[in-house]
Image (cartoon, rainbow, N blue to C red; front, side):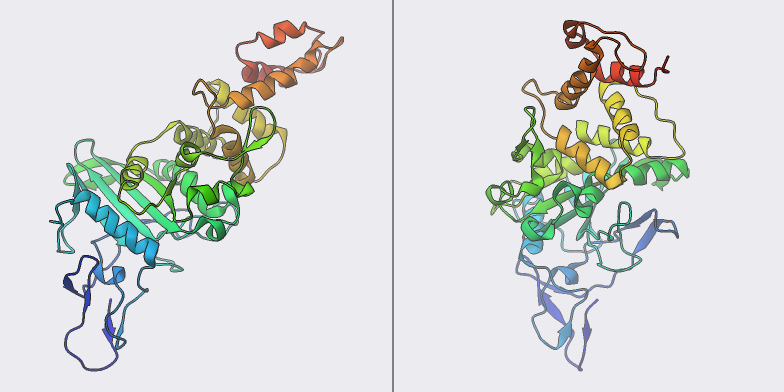
Length: 370
């Protein structure tokens, strides 16, 4: 909240839309907390206006600090998208409305143990800038969304293996598994609601600039590396901030609607869950299982390599075509006389015609030697 160093009239700052709003005080409402840091999810209580503003007077302190330009643009664009006629709510106790859904917006506090934070392996903690809590009464679903605007050229140093990227794409699925394993339930208005965690990274580095960075290259079907296109970045939950409000629907859609990549990341979370049994049920599942046993890698390296192979679909729109063809190439070793793992030589044409190369390779690698 805002505090005064000297005795002055009640403080006020100009808001994002030119109105005067008094400083409001808000406390965090803990929803889930695990002391070891595995799960930390806090509910936003209101739109905390003072944290969205730069103080009009040097005699007023505002914490944890005013928004930078990209952060301020995101808040302004979100509200302008939701309220194109300008009739947005002014009370911090009133949610934003998105159709029949309620949205509560909160500034997340950086470097605080009671703030929302995520990390994978032994990386630094990731504190996304904004919590976007979405309540959908039609489906009885609460989405704990988070959005982090930043420059990606310097702010995301590791590309697809960066801890901010993996915390956004992958860790929500790990958190959800932990919550379900602990039997956590969200009760609201006398009913049990579904609970989801999803995030989006908002790049103020333009696409043309970011696509030139090798750290975001993907693996191409010919063996080389290729720069990602807009759709690849979007599948990777990266949206580009533009000088209009038209990127906001992408953010809201990513927060509330899962794609195929999300489903596959949930399968990886199952694969790495020591309390779960991972049973392959598809070609991609078999590829994931093969990756898991082939080489000891950290979870960070595993997920990053998966993204480089899977974010770009084939010409027919399928994900994982590159991985399947790679497995088919490995199966061709069985064409040599004597074979390996006890299998005899086979015709190359028979290998090339196998409809499920990942499953077949998994089966053969598990076959005892004779």
